[in-house]
Length: 113
Image 1: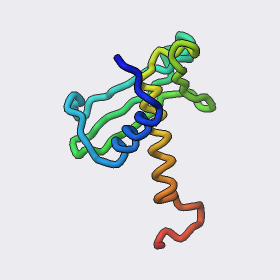
Image 2: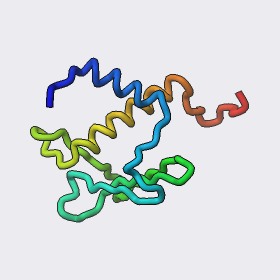
Image 3: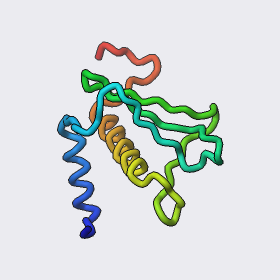
Image 4: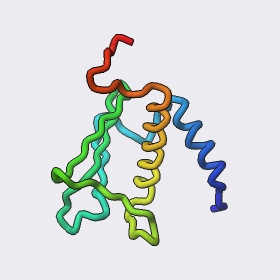
């Protein structure tokens, strides 16, 4: 596989984030789940995604209060889930862009505007 430039990847990410799409290999109402890298053998700490029949995406996180899920960098970071980590990077960028375009209301802010 030939290497792709970071600039090209960022253009591809932005294109994916702009246009709604459906991935035909995903089944609706099926739980897609992944254990995080630092579970220490407890088998706890999963992120799960369900795509509803209307196309809405539901996310749940199974983790002890006060902890977080960690999906490490592949190779040097010991990551077992490089695609999940990449998808979460894209999620972070999507949230950043949505916040720029349509910020969440602040507590106590009038929601009618």
